[in-house]
Image (tube, rainbow, N blue to C red):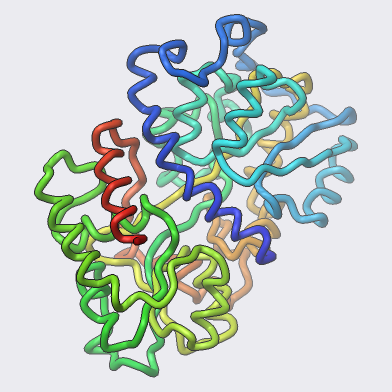
Length: 381
């Protein structure tokens, strides 16, 4: 996938904290949150598209997604197979998607692609249409790891599309295998011996890594955890060469930084250019993120939307998406269809041991978000 595509991950995650702060709003009802959808929008139209699946051909389908998530050859194949004309618009953050759906009541688009935490948020706001992904013929292809997510139990409002991971990359020519870092704790300790490091410009990712390095995990309610994480980041700050979510693959591949925090698709890009690089799933916790297919509340082409989702749940149809993205498949048999070089790259297909390190991001409370913000602002100074 192009550089433009993957730098959008920075935009979505840099603003993630604002959406995580809205988690408590669901407890009080969407109307209790400023910026939520109005009662008139929330109450308009039907939000139920469940029922017997019927493959729909012809017509149009309007998709609102991340840049690069629908390669031209995939669109062409879908249009040829179904006779449906596809139009695609893109957004650069989950919050942009949410704002668009709030302002329009979801009208204008049929398929949208929110990330995991945003699926939960948009369900609470009444912005998604219930369609029951498990009722689709190809739902049986979804891997068990993605079949019952916390953000949409039972996949009533969404179906998985792309998966990625947050870990770190190091240059194997600069450190022996026995001394190589394997956890966030050893990542922060090793950075000095490997020169200046690369850090993502993302307060959630950086804070979670620091919390895990000092023995805690995301959204912990213990103030001492944030004190320890803050001290760690403060002592580490002088060893940081770059804090940026853009150009990560190029810097690591060129050797400008020999160690750095990275998203798995950037790691894959870097490893393709420099096979001496290694991607690590930290043993003290690796964040897993999932982007999903959903039907907008205001969708006018529901049959086409359900047909699209079902089509994308066929690994043979979707493999070109994974190849373009540098990502493994969320579908059974999907990884086996990838080129051999991708299958061998652990940044694309993690091992069983690496999968045991995975943690799905959860929504923190407002008070915990304050800790995240303060800690990260201190680190960025």
